[in-house]
Figure 1 (cartoon, rainbow, N blue to C red):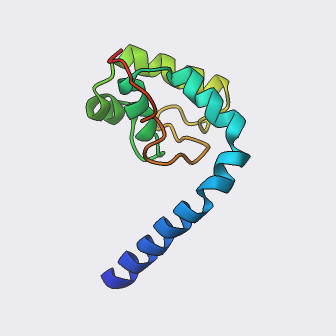
Figure 2 (figure 1 turned 180 degrees about the vertical axis):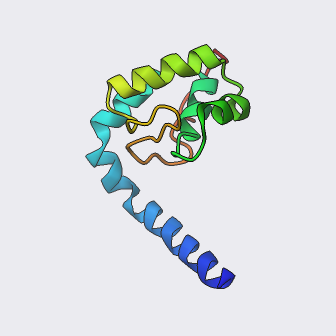
Length: 110
């Protein structure tokens, strides 16, 4: 069974790579809105990457080292732009982004 899970995970990852250009085009406006909300902050970017619907806000604060108040404002801004699902306690990004999405250019520590 674990081998099957590994194989399925590998297939999923390959499909993500193949589909990325189409996803980027489809989600271009939402991705631009996401970049605008996050800005150049490494901590906000790290927090957004953790928004998978499984992590609570407390877990996101701990893992990304973002301030609780900053995370709360970030979640509200993302919700206003319809970038996260309605459950703000365990935020989930509504679009898929590649792992290196925020690694374009230098980010500040804010």
